Image (cartoon, rainbow, N blue to C red; front, top):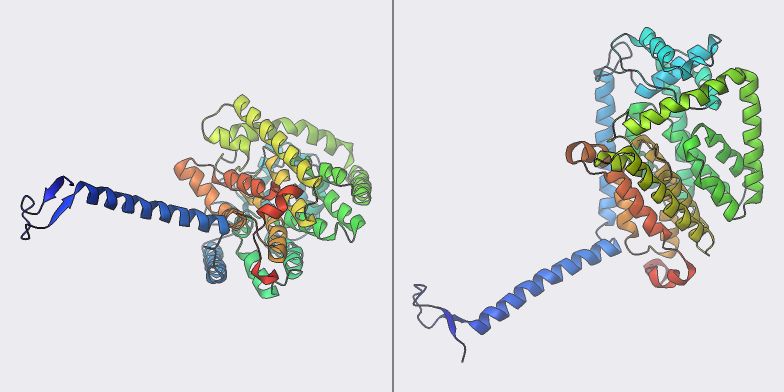
Length: 449
């Protein structure tokens, strides 16, 4: 016979026969925790399958992002004056120093951008003594583009730079997704609503060009390897991205692309020496110490840098500790990349893994550099549509998609390195592609029965 815990009379219940026994309490407790556990498992299952990312959300959320971004752009332009934006920086802030560097080249001083004192003085002379200054951290290859845009007035040059590279970015993204049946309109909306787009526009940065070269290279790697190699070589203005990509071409035996990249790089180097002289290259190498200090001390702010190195520094680690974890992360990323490349994984997975490893193996990764995730995500989405998405893949893709929007605020307000965490998660999901795992990990696609 069960012992009465609470009787109706003791509780003041009008019905004295009403009572709760020990057995009833245990049964209710089990039911309560059973329901809670069941709900947690359902939530985990939804995250695993990605079913929370419904067709309606995929349609509406990018449109909301686009509307917000357009309002931000209109607001920035409306509140600007004399080429200066509302934050007291030139519109397209980082592009201002590229344009000034071009002016220095045209004046016959291609070595000047590498001297931060001279370069800062030139920027303040052009945009006013109160404006912020930006350092030049590119090799002499990029001086050619800077000189070209410096032949135009600043605002037309900025508009041409942004619109031209944006169009180049959209071409491979639409082509990659179009091969899997994604409508052009939907591909364009998703590509334009990617939050790294508005970050890149705000900074006037080269993320569109980087994404276009990576996306175009992997789109053409099998069909046009010589063109793909040339596109990869044009990325030489980002030397910090040079670790994973050549290794991938070598491991995956893309000999023609590798030869094309080497030949293109040799031609580029010869042309830069001819146009800008050896002095510019000496100045570049001498400026690397300044660039290293910018990274180590978080010159732009560690909240803007999305590398493992910056995450450790953001969390309070010293420089040595940050280098240790960056080195460890780079080693693990390259080891996983080699594993993927030596497997029978789909070429699109190999391309995405290479791009992600490229981003993980550098300590100098700004939030606008996350534009490079766009072709990686497009490749993974294309493969997922054709063959089915792996567990957690949709959720990892969604987190990577919003990372450029969330990363900086999360780091500033909460001290959480969300950007690099989303990148690591996406790479981990992508890397699960060994042949023996494919049959077990791929979820069935209703489209293919």
